[in-house]
Structures are given as structure tokens and as C-alpha cells.
Length: 210
Image (cartoon, rainbow, N blue to C red; front, side):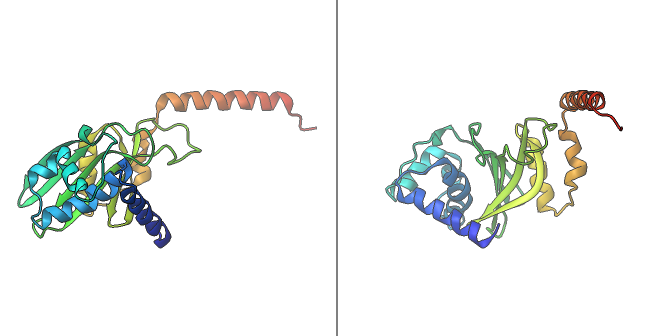
């Protein structure tokens, strides 16, 4: 993400807060990604607040901000191991990009955090129409910087998303073209081939070398 894009995102967040209404985008990419973990690592909020979105309203109300997009429809799970805690946020199905299906907040022993998102994106490859419909992007957020990890994932598969997050944390290499083969839709490929055959037939009928 360029400096200009980061600045644009910063202004988008600021405008959301200034409006007095927290929108879904700002909640997913700033409030959960930056504000909640900062409060948590400072000891100002506990696990209960982190895992109960209805409690977030109290934090927002202190800043005269309302949340009217359905914040109570977010559910949260936790996983803890070796001093690390992961908060797994499950959102209502997104209607528009780049809102999230899931996000994972990882806080390590040093109280440093990483935030990963599984985002809806209908325009990954607008010219490719042989991919399955349930395709989402694995991304992340750090401050005002949005991170694109160049990974594909089934938008309904939380376990697959968790696997990608662990691979990123482990710096495991990923061949997005090789791995992307599994997202090809055989029925769409067959249909495309039939269309190509028809186009070739029409072309041959209309064409003469001399």
C-alpha cells in the first residue's frame, strides 16, 4: 500500500469517528485491528471485553460514538497456546468488498500484535470467469497500512484461513498460481471450452483464405 493510500485510509477512519457513527469498515480495519489490541495490551480492557462486542459500545460511547451497523452480530472465539492468544472474529456475511468474513488478532508473549483479515473481493481478476464464486483474499492491517498477502482462500472456510495465518507467521512460502488451481471451477471451464468451440466454428464458417 502506498503512502497516499495509507493517508486516504487514515482520513476514512477519522471521518467515520468524527461522524459519531462507527461504520463496519472502520470497525473491522481500525477499531478491532488497532484500538482494541492497544487497550488490551495496556491492561485497560480484559478478555471479556475483547470477546463481547456489545461491551465495545461502552468504549465508543466515551468518545460519543455510536455503532449502529450490527456490532452485536459479531461473534468471537479465542485460542491460547504458549503465552500467545488469538482472537478470532466472525462477521456477518459481507455484502460489499473489502468487508470481512473473518479476522484473526494474534497477540504474542511480548504483547505485540498482528491482524489478519479474510476479505470479500469481487474484482480480484475481473477478466477471469472460470474461478469459483467463493473466493476471498487473505490480507492484514497494521496501523493505517493495509497488507495484501497474495493468498486465496475459500470465503466460508475458517480452518483454511487459520492455516494461511499460521503459514504467514511461520514465513512459509506460497505459490499463489500453483495453489490457485484448486479455485478453478470445472463446470465453468467446460462451459468456456464449449463457447470457444462455437466461436471457432463460426469463425471457420465465415473465413476464407482466398
